[in-house]
Image (tube, rainbow, N blue to C red; front, side, top):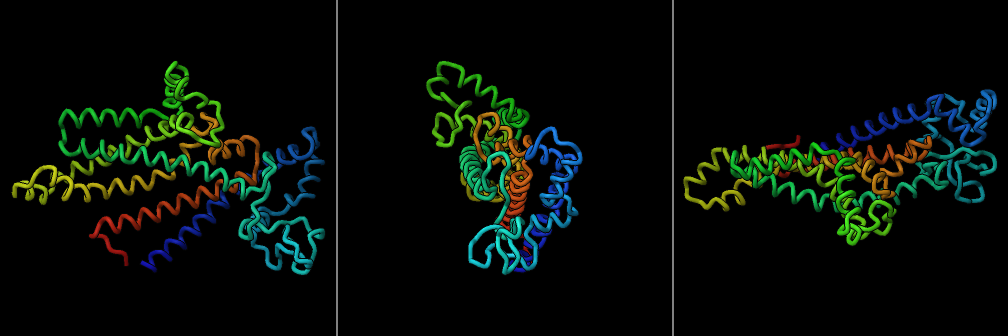
Amino acid sequence: MILFLLRRLGVMLLTALCLSLIVFALTNLPANLEKIAKFEGNARMSDAQVESWLEKNGYAQPMLVRYGEWLGALPGWTRTDESGEYGRCVPVGGTIAESPARCGILQGEWGESRVFREDVGPFIATRLALTGKMMFWVMVLMVPMALVIGVLAGMREGSKLDRGLSTLSILTTATPEYVSGVILIAVFASSAFGLKWFKGTATSAMENATFENFFLPVLTIALFGMGYIARMTRASMAEVMTSQYIRTARLKGLHFREIVLKHALRNALIAPFTVIMLQFPWLLNGVVIVETLFNYKGLGWALVQAAGNNDVDLLLGISLVSVVVVLLTQLISDIGYVYLNPRIRIA
């Protein structure tokens, strides 16, 4: 297990570096750098003034050099000057006034957001906490509902209950978040019932989320993901119910409920477990639409603001955090799959 974890961590690190390099290259294209110069300086800057501004601020260096600076892989540099002041990246033994360079993300400096005028690291941490809060309640609502629907549909394959629940699952999966979100807003937030119970849902920033302004965005995301998990659970449950050991349990005269709960359920949940863990990367994409629609200022909302305003440092930081979250959930999924399925062994 230890060797497996070390190999996976090495692959994760290499993947994160490759993806961060791709995102860095895309965000530092000449057209984007020109927009940054005009945003920071003057929108009517000439080409010569743009080149002068880029050279003055270090953007004229080769891309790999700037990528190394962004990572913080600068030998002989530190975050403290000779007086012991903790600040920007300076040469060892030098002072902060001698160099405007920064140490990079590996040394704790993620840059400054040009739009929000805040340090990127603490800003992302705040937005990620808000998105994590939403994800938690989405999983609390989505996973139990999906598992119950999938198990009920798979217990008696081909029955009316199976067909009805399967149709419901397909409908929820086929309806994207921006459609279901608008429908929920129109039905609840615009009706007399909605004005009473869900007032402020679409306009509140929801920093202090309550049931009234938090339920609709959570329900919007949960409905879309619920159908996919339910269909996978249903297929797995139906396959398990036709296996040989289930037939043997029936021949022994065991009660149907006992067969389902003690013999079929654990094996039927192996495949859905992997699907559930892989919902986290999808949630990071889904919250972009939902957070923008409901004005919930989480990580997805910040990503839209960064992309729309060419905020390179914030965009790079959010991309890196998203990559780390995706890789960690995949690792947890692999480890959990091993413990759920005793037939799998890790060398």
